[in-house]
Length: 171
Image 1 (tube, one colour):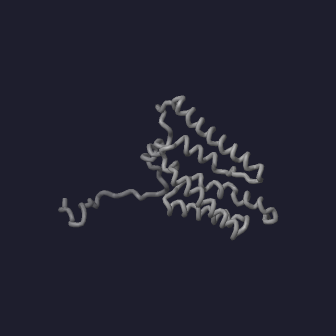
Image 2 (cartoon, rainbow, N blue to C red; image 1 turned 60 degrees about the vertical axis):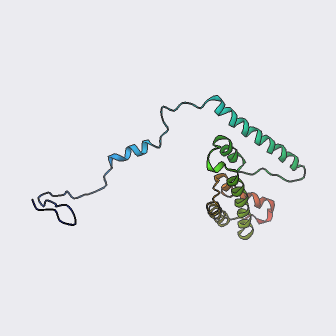
């Protein structure tokens, strides 16, 4: 046996490597996929963990609904797409970063303003929605205010809803 070379271990020339052909499945990938599955031993949430968030969401939507009903007499509506998603984030997962007040306020206001600007400059089209969506994501990341429901107005047809305010603008 020869001494090791300064740049690496000695390789015995009598050992031949098999050529690799085709795609091989790695046996060690299976545990990674198992990590995505929910734990089989996790227990169901307690009754209070189900009832309190549900009661909070009901109360919040009831108050907002009553306010919307009062504003409807004046021809104004404040019901928008992300309110249900905000309730889900706020009451079901209150300790997540998306449930912080700063994130909720900044994302809702910033994304709504971006959606209005995109509609104003580009009109009710796919380009306006795509531009508003990407600009909203950039806004939330830049201001460290990531709140996924903030993008709901843009992604679920805020621009279509705005176009109903000006009926002559739709294609």
